[in-house]
Length: 254
Image 1 (spheres, helix red, strand yellow):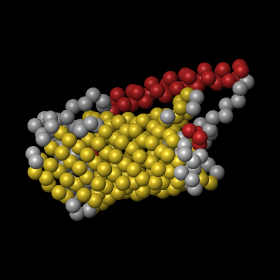
Image 2: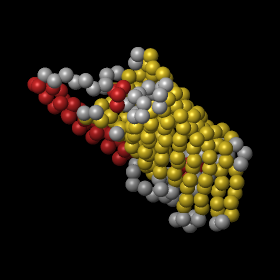
Image 3: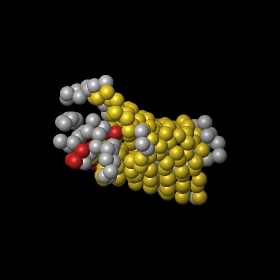
Image 4: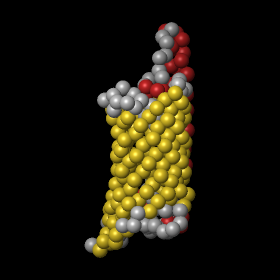
């Protein structure tokens, strides 16, 4: 199986390098302007962060757009899949430290939708959160000799710890992936996988930092330990073995 895409880890890090470079240049110029005009900078990452697990004003809606570079194990395919997934995530704030979060991650042939509640609690600059999401996977492939479709449901409990500085924040997150059912269609024949199983877990470390004005940029590394990943569903290597699946993330908050 050969699926060719244009993004590579090298290009990914080139984008990160130049983003940081121009951010530094802008920050330097901006600092000079502040000194000249003597205008205080009141920016606080707590009010603009998307990843930090903290309570915010109710009915507030925030969102973020991410580029996910997933490194698929060679054992799953005949050739490496070099494919960036795009992800849009939204958060709607409820009272009492609660919020609802949802996301759509897509590679067009592979799609993953999540939705569920989170509870957040803060002590000074330390922030804690727990969440539970329902996940729907959908994929369809009609190229490269395939005529295949997959649908499936998962559950995803989550725990998050974060620490906030004035203009940046560190976030450590852990997720568990529990697959309830998968259905694979091959030329009209449906193969059900209805016995629930633990697909695996992941740990991610992210850095959020002010980019310009109130815009926040985030970088993250996620280590997945999984039996399968929605990105490589055409190979569908679901078995009793779990593989390390590295993932690099870059996002922009809105």
